[in-house]
Image 1: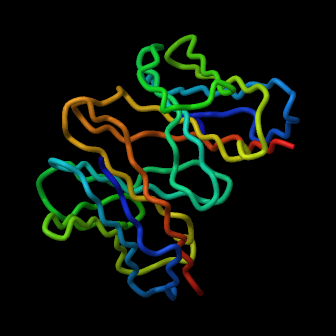
Image 2: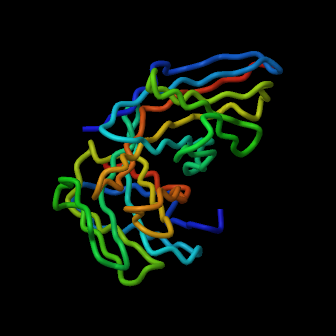
Length: 115
Length: 116
C-alpha cells in the first residue's frame, strides 16, 4: 500500500521569508509525486510534479520541490513567501507499478503567510 | 475556472431527497473522477471513469450513483444521504487515466453539500 504524510497541519511564515511545506511518502517502486494548492472555495490547482530526472522540480508561482529518495521526501519550497501564497497545500503520490494510476493525497497543510 | 465546471456550487438537502451533482470538462480529456473532501481528512477518491467506462469504485455506498454519458460530462446522483455525507465533492479530469504517463488532474471548484 502507498501512503503520503504531511506532518504539519499548519505552517506560519513571515512575508518575504523562505517557506517549506513537508511531505514524505511510502510506495513500492518508483514514485510519481505531485503538489497541489487549494484556495478558499476553490478546487485544487496543480503546482508541480516529479516523474524522473532532476531532483529539483520547478513549478508554478515560483514554487519548487526537492525529491529525496533516501529520505522518501518531496518538500515544497519557495525562496520568498507572499501573503497571496496563503492556502491549503496537498502532496499526492502515484505509484509506477502496473495498474497503479490512483492518486493518494496527504491530509493537507495550511500555509499562512503573515504580512 | 473554465476548464472544469461544477454545478451547483452549494446544495442543502434532506436525507430523503434525491439530487444530482453535475461536472463538465472543456479540456478534451478522456478520464474523469469524483472525490470527497471532508474536514481534517485526505481527499477520498470515489469513482474513476475512462472513456465513459467506470474503472474504479472505491467501496462507495450505493446511495451515491455516478453516471458518465460522454467524456465531457459526469454526474453524481444522490439519494437517501446521511449527515456524515456532508462534504465538498470535487470533480477532476485528466487526459487519460494514466497507467503510463502520470498526468496531473485538473479540478473543478467543487459542490459544498450539506445533508440535514
